[in-house]
Length: 296
Image 1 (cartoon, one colour):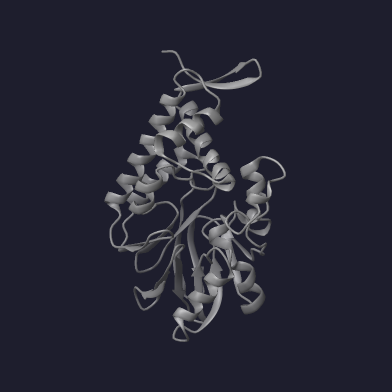
Image 2: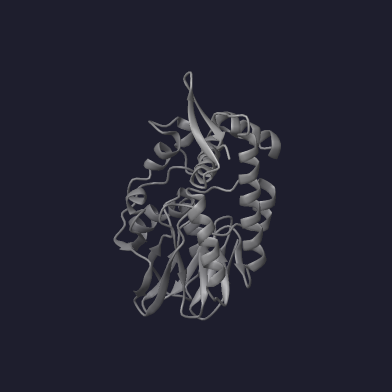
């Protein structure tokens, strides 16, 4: 874990969940705040006093590993927080994420820091487009797909914080089943990122990279590979839980309860995408809802 200065005005604290750093006239802002209080504390210790006072947090999206340090930062440093308009409610009410994953009052295994951050206010709601943070002129990019309203940040120097839009090779090749909320939108986001010029890229789960073309291709190909596999597992008609089990066997996935419900959301996102494409449909069969291929 270390603070890496990329330009005079932009840096990154590289960690399991990296934190972008924007120098401003009055101090500096973080892009995301990590999974817990200690993530912010370590980042602040690494940055030191050279960039002034800690003033703000820009959250790219509402997942717990990106907002976990918000509450401590507001309470102890008086920072102002900014978040996507469409996800602000989830940042202010993070217990909705485990409800979202489980579908009702969640099991205790979903009520930890990886799925349920501490609640924090969102002082300013953000939309895609030009945005000024004191003297910084930023461009906020629509990156929805991984989550409903995720935003990326492009700085004046052309550095592009892509949040969770792109996963590093180590995670893609190891896990294959990447979390997505809407696969169709996520594939469109990959195309959007590939089409935007940038001088460098800050990945939340991969640190700083100068180029991402090959990595975008890898992300896309693995997403479609898994999508094809899920389609194959539905060939004879199957419930989503059966398809999930088959995917675990094919990919060698071992899950605890929290990981199961996180991954099951991703499996259903793939199934929805196949339904949107007209490749799968749903039929009712004696108390079971089966995903079946659509006849040609």
